[in-house]
Image 1 (tube, rainbow, N blue to C red):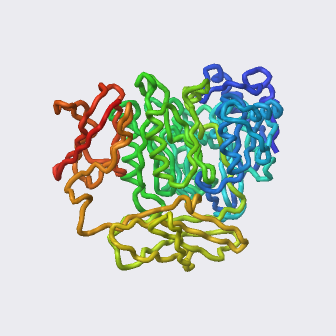
Image 2: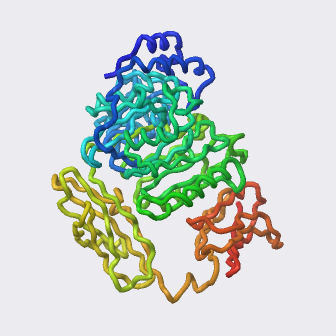
Image 3: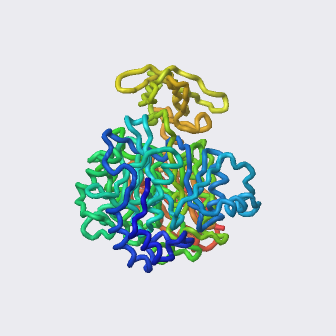
Amino acid sequence: MNRISASILALLATAPLFAQQQGLPHVLAPYEVPLIPAYRDSRASLDRGIETPPTFVPRTMAEWEEVQTLVITWTTYPSILKQIVLAAVQECEVMIVTDDQSGVTSYLQNTANGGALTDFSNITFLNAGFNSVWTRDFGPECIYENEVDSLYLLDWIYNRPRPLDDAMSDPIGNAKGIAVYSTTQAPYDLVHTGGNFMADGFGTAFSSELVLDENGPNGQYNQTVKTEQQVRDLMEQWMGIQQGRYILMNTLPYDGIHHIDMHMKLLDEETLLIGEFPTGQSDGPQLEQNIQAIVANYNSVFGTPYRIIRVPMPSSTGGAYPPTASYRTYANNLFLNKTVIVPTYREQYDTTGLRILREALPGYRIVPIDCDNNGANIISASGAIHCITKAIGVNDPLLIRHQRLPDTYETINPYMVDAYIRHRSGIESAEVYWTTDTTAGFNSVPMVPGANNTWSAGIPAQAANSIVYYYIHATANSGKEQVRPIVAPDGWWKFRVLDLNAGLNGVNGPVIADVFPNPTSSILMITVADAGSERVRITLRDALGREAMRIQDGPMHSDQRAFADLSYLAEGAYMLVVESAKGRSTIKVVKD
């Protein structure tokens, strides 16, 4: 149980901004700075959950796993919160922290701002103290004993002097009947924030070096100073993040909060969605250095390099980027079972951003919510959808881990599908479902159990130029069933059976595989095939053949995509030219 000390009560009494504050920013407000010492020093007298480390090796949940509850704090940005609720109740329980249940109910029943909520069966109201809307940062993380057994919540020290927010994990845990582990007392005190943490579900996690700064000698909220090794030790002890798998990145020069969820997202165990600025602009150079450091020094849990998918970071309406404009990002999205809720900004950027997400996450219901307009400009506060939500995993996950099959030239031998599958009751059976035509339905192949919770099956070999779509289904001894991807059969993994005797369209060198959208008024996404490791130059040329824009001049990114912002080019027709030492490809592009 949470016990508010006399010093905290005095802090609340002398600082009215904490009395259910309705407008605290994502960043530390100047008027909060004098409150930090009392906030920090009060911890020694607080009784906060289980304050000793787990006696088991914990597994921290990944965001794409099955969710039972979404938690939001109802304060600022109600129009955005309402739209989140309308999307979320179709997937899980929504717990709304509020001191005004009747007012929130009336707001949700009103037809404005996305429509009326008529069914409240998936809504739970929690009357608990709060200071701000930024639930991601102060809400609890989810850890499991023995990977899939007992679920616990984990609470860090919030890096803001907001004591009611900091204590939020306790009433959430009490309401859900879930015990809370708390890293709030020395020597285990750890300052951290949910927006600066992403985990793959199997011992890997990402953060910026903010976590080192705030726990080190210059930290303002830490009771005891921690070295980098001590921070890593705590993450392993309390969350199961392996020593060599806690990936810390340099903070970005223009990011005021240094939360990685504003520019990157783990889409699965081996895929990183990365925001991309125009070449050389804003935080782009440092962000690129961080990504290259990851690629050079770390592999995914499967032992192979991370797949990188890039998505443009929109500019302001005037074409500016940080530090003279707000971060606009599609990476700040929320997984919620079969739905992904995505912040959006302006159609000319959203068209491309949403397409990239739909391609990367086939079968998911993608729900866009405007975070830049209509009186709900949350992005100007350095936050969006992910920042104001927190998901709680299910009590009995059926865990499936699988590395997608790569493209292959194999046309004779079966394609072996291996998966790690666990449930606390054990696994009764598992199958691979596959097809070369999703409209014709899927065939099934039973998986055979092996050592260490692995299951295997072979998809029959297919002819060259085939595309194979597949997913995994498992049934636990308890009767629980699960698929991976979680959206199957509407979503799937896929791989191509390549032809040894033919290149793409018989052309040597880089080939323009896709240009989208075309025509365009701003962002252009160029997908290049057969680029190899060669230097690739991508240019736009006007009607007289003059270079109007140089888009790329070097090796292609691993996802073979490049972006260009045509906003400030004159309207008209241009020739897109992609060339390397091996060949040249062109296509007409229209700026409207």
